[in-house]
Image 1: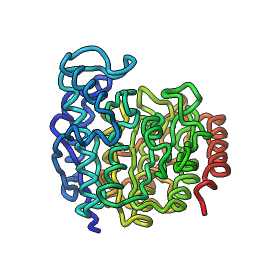
Image 2: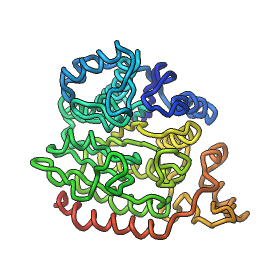
Image 3: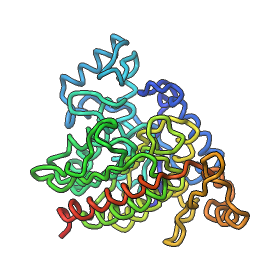
Length: 391
């Protein structure tokens, strides 16, 4: 398969979004400008997708629910759910465009026309069969799984979700199917959507294929990276997917207003590099990525640029000795202090040239109790859940 990386993008992404955090609507424009500044379009293909058709939604959503969304769009006011996801004139077409970007990604990867495709407007993982939730209206992730299996014969599909919120809609829609659904998310039983506990492992043919790593607030890179590395590669190697779907929500970044995982761009680079390597190791490079959550435009753009710079080879892969982030050093303000001159030289090597703008040079210091809780959560998953899918 060709190593081509493609971005699916539609002009409607530049307008109103689904979130009530209005400043987040500008993340697409900011991201495209940064991609251009970094020279990513020299090796990044771009496709403008068609909006999905109504018939494209029915494998996952009921006709009554699709009609409900269309009707609320015509009314142009109110909410599609419990006062999270607003109804407005144009929201129906906007969500069809988001789904269309994902279906275009499926076509490109399924046909072999591209190895990696990124749909920044996709990843609507809270949408359920007959209801909207959490700024998500139609679940394009579940629709992608259906299309890959039915139209392209790729029966073993893995979904890795690193959004800060659990992908409850995706899990519910695929709970009884042998599709690996692996999620790392902030979890305490109360944080939205309240699902994603370690005991949610699936049922029927899907038993063992829901893998949830619930993580505490304030764990930072130092807690997240070991949990990810302990669970994700092992689970994927046991499952042996034919294609990987990565829900690359970046609302876990420490500057995001909705999640408090306190991650830096280095963690998102680690995720991108690890998933890129695993895709080539396990499934001929087939990797579809969704933008999902992220509500601070500048930091979303930097995380997305880190992803695409990794997939296109502009950023060199991290070695087993290079974590890509520095250990936190508390300063007087509670933030990481600056690195030494030697540390900066090392950092500049890891984030070379123009890509140094993507590195976070500071951030909150992880809470020690959060680090311990993250280790315990990963240990529960590796000891109790992963053996369910391993030979």
